Image (cartoon, rainbow, N blue to C red; front, side, top):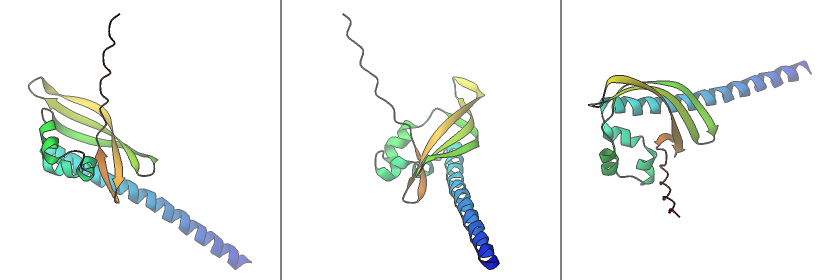
Length: 141
């Protein structure tokens, strides 16, 4: 009876430790991807950034369109503040950024943003927020 209890508690502790490490490895894998994405962004490496975009895997945006849509903002630094997993295969990453928008904004600006990341074929990819089309103006009466 005593041996059964010891085996039970040993197995339970091992299972709980395994679950905790899975959560940590999921967060670490995402943290590595977010870091690589933002290191490329700070370096101005648009090709590498595109490789971390979900649209590069889904075919929704070509590299040429991606590159032509970027520019103007010069990122100086980033800091990952928090990572959340609101549902399986989706993550939210809170960041603090410092940037310039020359020649309009020449002093560093700090901003807090939340990025969405999705899991595609076992890898995390940044998912641009969908821009909602503007509602047509109501005709005047």
